[in-house]
Image 1 (cartoon, rainbow, N blue to C red):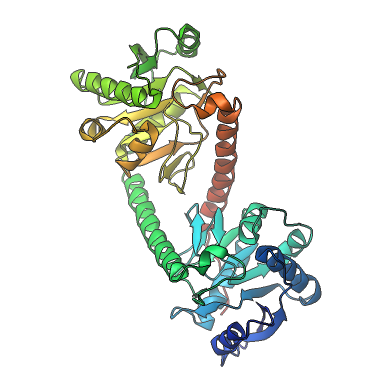
Image 2 (spheres, rainbow, N blue to C red):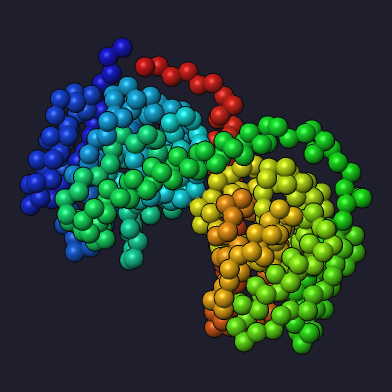
Length: 452
């Protein structure tokens, strides 16, 4: 079957003749493309010029019968993985799965969902050097303005929950020693380093995902058919004696919940509140070891149950996470970094903040007590750094009640709504990630026939 050449529009500033030479060299002999070099709109903020040029290409160059177009930047460099067949296959798969964009490579990304053996979903990304834009997304870009301090790739990511990238990458960015769009890329060697790091990241996260999927596949069926009435979690609540308002609150949160065996632990007081919290966590872990607890729940006294909480939901996830080899499970966080969906309700995270509701497993106890610490220690960051075996529950079962002050985090005293805003942002992020996970998980169960 003979395929029509794919319309490709490469953005180039007229004065950048070195980059134009690069374009002609990279596309030489690639008859699968119909190449057009488009003069870029120049702007003192390079990213605004890039955005305006992308809009111009879509409105003035794209033809009515184009199902998609490819827009490239003039620093594109094809990788050894590129073949016309590989590109066509990925475009057809992405189209079948309802993608808005397909990226030939990224210099950074966040969120990781395996869609097919060569396609991955990204929550956020950087790198527009090789971008397939599908027609259904044309008007979204045309109807969107770029405002300070927004940048083009982040803006596009915010407009779509259907951005996919190819891996292995078919394109990276060539080092020219300068950048008209991203000033940080003026540093020699930075661009190459970014692509090397992101390829390592894809490999590591995909391996991690497969490890957990294997654990799930070997889980005994009994884990989903347990009677939870007989289960009770050792629960330790950290409270300063003078914070009677918080003590009253936390007692009301656990009132009538027989699945928790609650012990209030007097917090270790220190002039650095965050350090006092770590000492309190160490104190609780020591008690748990003396009690031979298999799993414990540590709560701060500002914990508040969400409407998503149920005994069955929490206990099932605690048991399943234990089988999957987790060290700790967070019931809700005000901020997290890279995330990989493991199940519809549990997400591996590279790190997460907040310790108002954390499940710790016995095998993690000794590691916590053996970890070096000092007065600069921040509990949530340290817990994240000493284990890669951590997960986050979503929907959250816990948030932090806003008391208008904090004994641990001074920033919460300066910005009274910070804690509420952080949890809201985290929940919004996870909602988008969960939606993408559910969508692309359903595609993985389908067999889609693709014509070459």
